[in-house]
Length: 304
Image (cartoon, rainbow, N blue to C red; front, side, top):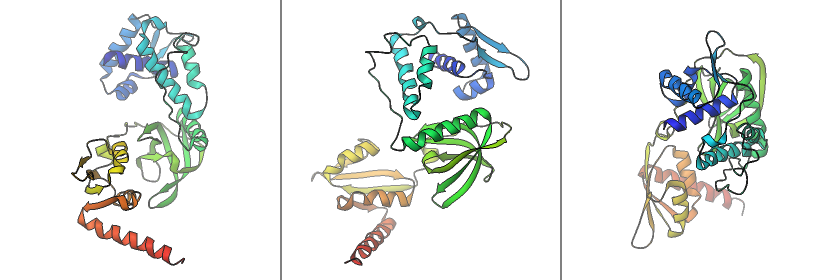
């Protein structure tokens, strides 16, 4: 919706000193003409936005400006606050709390008593994750190369990237950047990154496409799975795949069907159910599952 996009533009202008129209058009997936109309609408609403042409030019908001909260409805302000509080939950700082002050709502009733939506984006790895996020933010802002040790299914390796975006997706944090080794843009999961450090070397900003994070693009469903689960597994199936992923049988068992991307992850996932899951399809994976169970059995019998 237009109002949502304009609020998003305003939020970005409050956080960044200078933004180009082409950058905003890419972020919001609209034309630069639409962005220019949005900027004009914000100016008509009384927000002092300045545009500068030429090298180093762009769109910015007047220093010291604060939004009159009467231009936003109570529900709109609650949505903004919930989002800002969630970002502070990641790194334990008050950076976005300070942004709330910029919005002129620090002492209003929006801040107390009426907070019905609480979002915590932190994870079990918050202690190690927060410093990484802060370090990557600095590297992005300063246009400095980022170096780290990365753990991948095929082994670990040293990587050097030009970082462009921090992304929260699939309940995890990622950094999107140009990998000097692969000569292409890559998505790196922060939990797999160790010894993260900012290089002294700057990089020239290149045209960075936004990552295509559609589930079907990142996780193409190449394996059609059918399995039978015991009734007390229902809560896990609903939590992980939704209520439409199974059909309840006459005996109460659950006939599960879904598309899965990775064979190893599928086998590992099935084993977490122990004897409460029976793989029915694909048949070629049933032998591999049997072999895995036998190998585990033999390993534990050796210790007797």
